[in-house]
Image (cartoon, rainbow, N blue to C red; front, side, top):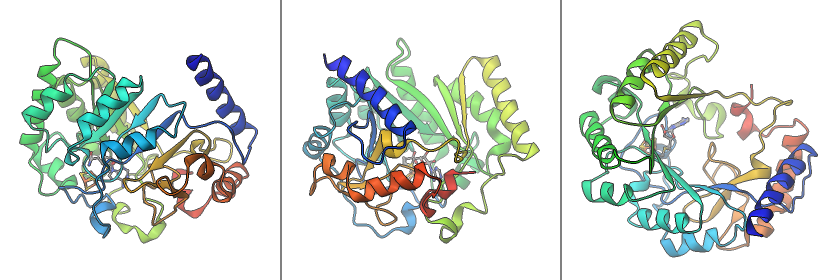
Amino acid sequence: MRYARKILNRIGIEFSFRLRWAKTAFFPVKITIEPNNDCNFKCPQCQLPYSNKKPVHMSLHSLKEVIGQFPNLSHIVLQGLGEPLLNNDLVGMLRFGEGLGIHMEFTTNGSLLDKKTAVELAKLRNTTILFSLDGASSETFEKMRPGSNFGKIVDNVAYLSALRSAGVAPGLEARVLVTRHNAFEIPEIVVLAKRLGLDSVHLQVGLSDWGRGKAFKCVDSIKVDQEAHSVKVALEEGRKVARSCGIGIHVYYNGYANRKRCNWPWSSTFIASNGDVVPCCVIADATVVKLGNLFETSFEDIWNSQAYQALRRKIAYGDVPAYCKRCYR
Ligand SMILES: C[S@@+](CC[C@H](N)C(=O)[O-])C[C@H]1O[C@@H](n2cnc3c(N)ncnc32)[C@H](O)[C@@H]1O
Ligand code: SF4
């Protein structure tokens, strides 16, 4: 019965998206919940080092309150801006989600993965952990992540990977933000991911300006042109190496267009650690756009509020809000 309801909900989401409904009775199946908004790094391409937000750690209790408002979930990404391993409840949150039959996922910088936490993470069965592996050498990696210790992070990943060496769970993957700093190193990153026993590599070619447009200058100097010959060659080389060493590879570009619209406002949402609701994880910041707060208003009311309906109309009819523009061609 629950399964049938979930299938109907998925079909409903697809219909409401295609038919451009501003109001929808269908709830998200995949959401992003930010467990905390603080970090031990200051990566220049990330918006976090430039913000002056008060650090907020969501508790397991609050996470349960959030999840309780979404009847049809099958996937939760437990991460936003910030380093999820700083939240002491993280493992408990992952276990809680798994217990509800929900696939859990989070991305980490890997620097705080101690042995005790690795042992707990290795017991998870329906979770995917992505490691930000933005280089295959200290020099490249530390350009993207100043002040980090590449060797230590590699050791941390290797330790967790060795713990699960007999099984396939949890999923362990690499996530790479492709920039001028590391594009030339893609094949080596793929080899490193394979050596670390990871399942696949996700290459993100388009950078986010976090909905701030030109006001967020930090990405323009390092972004690559996804149409450039040298970038295409580097990606193709990465694919070749992945094929030859037997590891999955996925490449993502910024590429929405009016004929290929973003479906997030119909299918998904982002909940910040203080409960603020933001349209998606590419913006991930309620100071750019806030659609409500889950601890003040029910998600049901927020999901069909005037603000959400206005956003859906704009996306449906090609009047894309300024904060979404970077995702479009
Ligand atoms: C914001 S971080 C949070 C998780 C964790 N602290 C980490 O770095 O892996 C999540 C992902 O966003 C990526 N990221 C950082 N700045 C970005 C940008 N300007 N555009 C797109 N992705 C970005 C990071 O490389 C990381 O893979
Ligand atoms: S990208 Fe991740 S590690 Fe870097 S500052 Fe942002 S949240 Fe921290």
